[in-house]
Image (cartoon, rainbow, N blue to C red; front, side, top):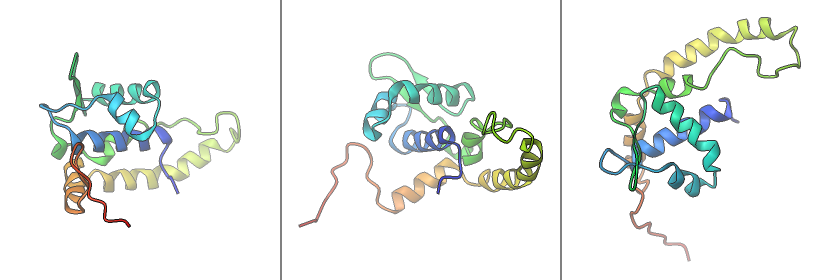
Length: 146
């Protein structure tokens, strides 16, 4: 079950991918992420640019450029996700008469969830990936399947 808007989910995945695989000396191109996951670059790039405009990602232009996260220990899951949450009615025209009551009912839970997510840093998620043996980009992946 996906509880986040699609853009927020993609942004969190992309931010984690960049923090885990990249750095200032090894920026990750949006194209590399798009190719790795079969996403459309033109759909991913505005998400990355938004994270850049919020100061979550930095970018290096030109050949060998891309995105990196300068301080993943200072970026929380809530920081990334909140860039893509808004107070608009998610159904646009459907249920408009119910939207104010539904949004008021959901706000406390969302607030509590964001509070909890603000305690989880991107760096701590990268540590969990390392601990679980997820290979870095370019590392050989051993497969013992027969």
